[in-house]
Image 1: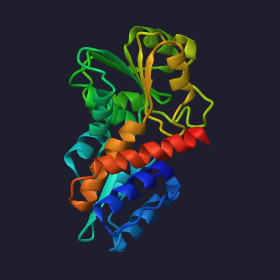
Image 2: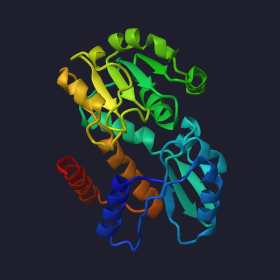
Image 3: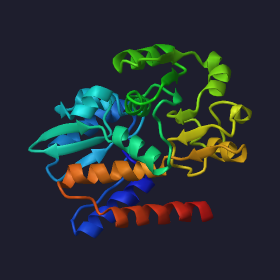
Image 4: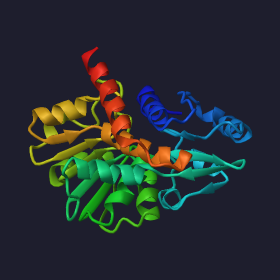
Length: 266
């Protein structure tokens, strides 16, 4: 349920820690999700799994328990397998915060626009809601955006239809793309001309490493980051959940950076 970069990340962690474990990517269609979870539960050799969209919300209903952040966010990004039980954890929320901090962006008092209303958007909003001045959530499915804002108690801002994007983009400071738009290397979630140098753009996509949104935002003088650092922090947290050991951060970070550079130069 994870991509090739994630496999590289986890494999480097296991190797550095001397743990005899392997990681493999598996594509699971929505209809196959219950069977995939049941197989994991039945296989005593499975430490757990990393979960990506579109399964992060749906999988939460198939597990035996949830960690506190997963309960609040309503989405699962990491599953641990202990004594025949599958427990869901959310590592997106803390990873999102750490990635923003590493990039030097202070969310306190800032205005934010989150695109999307799935699990990643929920984690981003949960991470921002204590500090950000206002958070708007814009999604193709306005009902999902409303549910997200209701569930997480967004204090100021709220759900917004896509038709209001041109106005919203101009009045916010932080733009978070928590949709898959741009993962094809071509699409953008809104016209790049709307980006201003004052914006900070956080595109949660990490494959490709430079999406049209990130490239376009940088071309227009804005600061923009992709989801690679968030993937790293997710990976460190997942490693500790699975193994009960501190993650070998230096080795995992180096392996991820090498893999990203190889992709950029190929």
